Length: 191
Image (tube, rainbow, N blue to C red; front, top):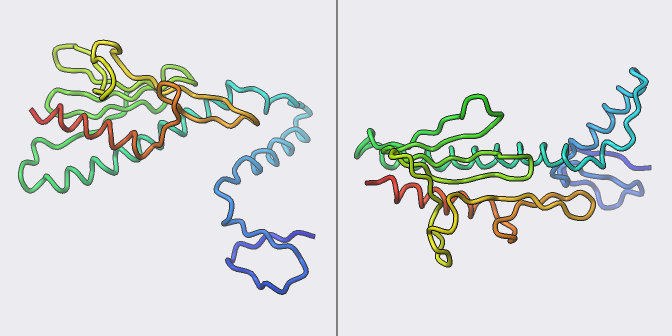
């Protein structure tokens, strides 16, 4: 028999197998399965293939990824504004939601915008928009600036429906992405 324990470390001499729920990062999927089964029992509608629908998984993953990006940007923007506030509060960075979208957002300062938008469930666009209407991408050390007007972060569906986010085919780390684009935004909007 398996017992769930949410209290923390367990005695080592027990004969029963214990699972510490804190060892698992995301248990919402199993809760969803249980609720889905309860709904199936109540409604009589059976959905056996729903977990094979990659579009639904991509939609869920892209919403979560953009929310994670927004949270990280807001955190670092808040710190930047606090560190800078006592010198010149008028040049602070502002974060706005884009209306009529689920969770797209904009960073704004000195007539420069950094736009993060879900173009589709498997593509997230990141680009700069200047006051004169010019759209451009963050500079990359190994890329000609005129090659791309915006950068695209694309979803990759792997084995067992694992979804990872990639830039130019390479897996990305959220923290590095936020640091890179926010640094580029701050440097370009300081003028």
